[in-house]
Length: 368
Ligand SMILES: Nc1ncnc2c1ncn2[C@@H]1O[C@H](COP(=O)(O)OP(=O)(O)OP(=O)(O)O)[C@@H](O)[C@H]1O
Image 1 (tube, helix red, strand yellow):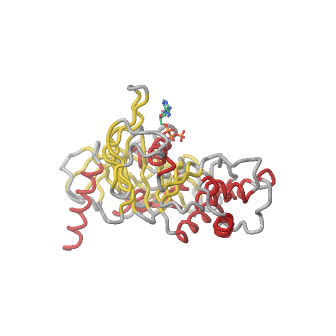
Image 2 (image 1 turned 120 degrees about the horizontal axis):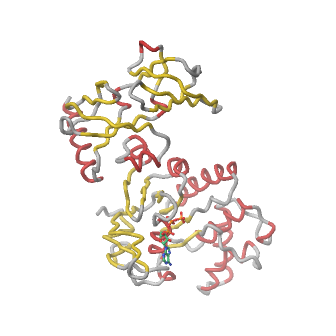
Image 3 (image 1 turned 45 degrees about the horizontal axis):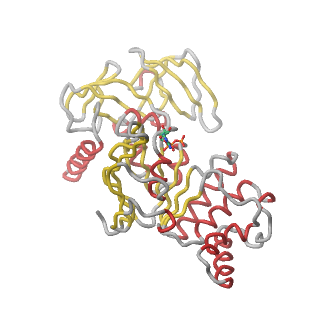
């Protein structure tokens, strides 16, 4: 545990009705001052983790630590944590100022202190001058900022955000992603953000936890997770991927689509069955004879920045390509890729085993 750790889950299990396990022995650490994202499909347990941190529910097993102390049974109002809910949960009958001031009034702060703190919080979210507006007169994005101001005014050590952008249209959502990220940097406090949108997670986070059925499948920086997905679930969930069955031949050599290719992976057993991931943007279109793979173009869509081209190789594998070059449906073309673009996944590998293999690989690289 680093001295930067603020929250630690140790083998936390959450069951409802003593039967439904929604979190199964989940362990992780959250450090001070970083932007974390819990990412996963609906029902995987993201909100459950937030509610456990906030103290709205208690774990069935395991320990939750906050600054080194077990907080399993500490009530929400005694935790240094504030939540921004999906629907913002603002009070419609109070104006902007009173919505933000609410928590401070409960703490019975003096009026002058309340005014100073609320003004400061509103300044942070660019809502100076909106104090006397009714909530009903505020747009979706502005309500969002009021909800954030209400959370930061209490000066918590951690802010939990449960899909706060899901109600906004695409343009506003992108703007708010940028704003939230900036705000987190300026405040320097820990944000734990929940989303099921992988692009949002990749754009905003220092660290992402990918969840599936009550378990963390993988944790890491956006680059780690995008470039080195540990299994098919993560590879599928994070961006579009080509995933085909293959077989390791020896270190730095893998076989798929009926051919042998140079790769950068090592430490796997010869003949071991594996899955190969190649991102669509890592495939380049060439003349048929210059490609490492020969494919036939099946369909093509123009996506504004690139063409999305679907092709099939002779072994029947589909390959999705993102290319600025146009192809012709029915045409025989080549696909070129670097050895580094081939990511080899061992079947059923755990995150720990994967990390060990990657460390061994990096050490091997350093020696070269
Ligand atoms: N009070 C409860 N009683 C029984 N089951 C519950 C309760 N609250 C949540 N669950 C179940 O726990 C599982 C995880 O729910 P959770 O809300 O954490 O998922 P989520 O990943 O946040 O999903 P979403 O993205 O849809 O909000 C779901 O299967 C849900 O039905």
